[in-house]
Length: 83
Image (cartoon, rainbow, N blue to C red; front, side, top):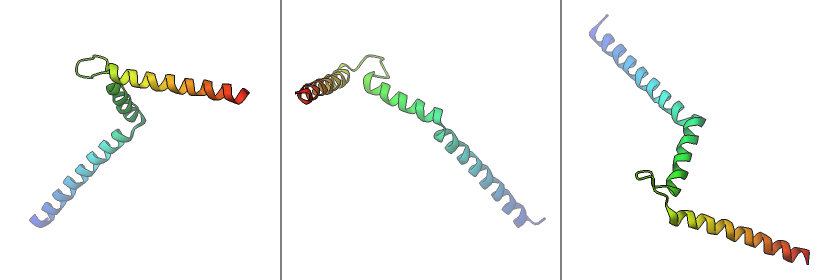
């Protein structure tokens, strides 16, 4: 086996290992559990400061106001539809 052949085989093996590692990372990132965990952290981060654990009352009030507004709109539409 020549030096050139040995170097080429070593390069191919290194490339194979890098590809295997990349595939493992992609499989991990695309797994449903990882995606769900990432999304849950994102939603939690909107309502709670992840560093301090304190609630973000402004964001909570925005969502609560939106829910109340939608409920009120449904009530008005239902009342108007009955008449």
